[in-house]
Length: 416
Image 1 (cartoon, rainbow, N blue to C red):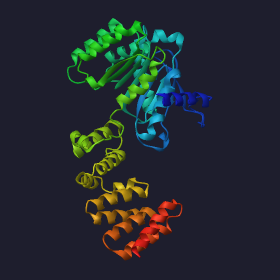
Image 2 (image 1 turned 90 degrees about the vertical axis):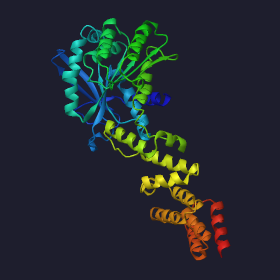
Image 3 (image 1 turned 180 degrees about the vertical axis):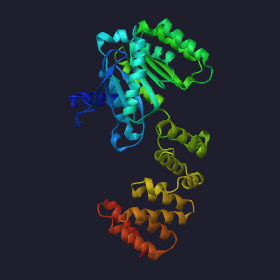
């Protein structure tokens, strides 16, 4: 959370104007675009902000969309979330649409004019975004305070429009709105693919009963237990809960996105092994419209775990499954040496030799690969080949530590 907050503050400090008008050239300090929709339903102009993921113009993929109510205040938090986590594949890329509000008009729009505002979002805002930008079928909603109660009304009247709701310090969970949600859920007994995350500070006693009432309704509904969560925070208040709604809420919703890591081979087997892993990544690919291949980080973690546990059978099984992975993934000669030694330790010098020679194609000047080749040849009593390999290790050891160079020289001396 501290990292997200820091990036959020940097955005404010560095961007003199966070969102440029759509017809202006973007500069390094501009985060997104600002646009205006002439709304016939509301009878006024509505300003929105639009953030497109980095590289959007060079890609052809379609993206989820997070609609952020009170966008002038909260859009940057949604952007900061994905920018902080994309580099480790812990968040998918998504478009952020901020629906800017006017504090004087906001209360009416979210309360007694809520039907008009729902129709604006459904009939004017959605078509505006979906026809201009490459969106997929994942649409999410964020709302703070009164926008939380508005979300319940939206869900009960238009349940198919949003896949997920993230609500911070939600208020106006009125009896009418709660009854409408309960009535809708009672009519739908098959599992509903919708997600709710809502959070409240324990100091917000005025909203506690109504938030707990929603939890009681959801417990009895066909929404799977893992698809909703109410977090009552001891450390947040009415104005800091949005950080939880974005950071924790999005992390939970996207929990199937980040690469799977197993911390033991036993855990991998209990998960269901390769077949279960393939199913997971196939479903992940379909949901986010990305590759359905097993993630490269998962492959790396599994191979390395098999090595750590000296499970050569699983190591070989994974190597067959992840064909060409080692040569495509690793950017350091160290890994070729490490895995070839594992082959050698388990009585498979042919696989070790093949891997080291493959590594030399990628790293032709690698002293450590030549040294590993020398060790392999020496073990096979091929002294001429061992001598040549150690000589090359010394030749290419420029920049290595003195200890390493001396070790190569000692090995060469022992062969002579």
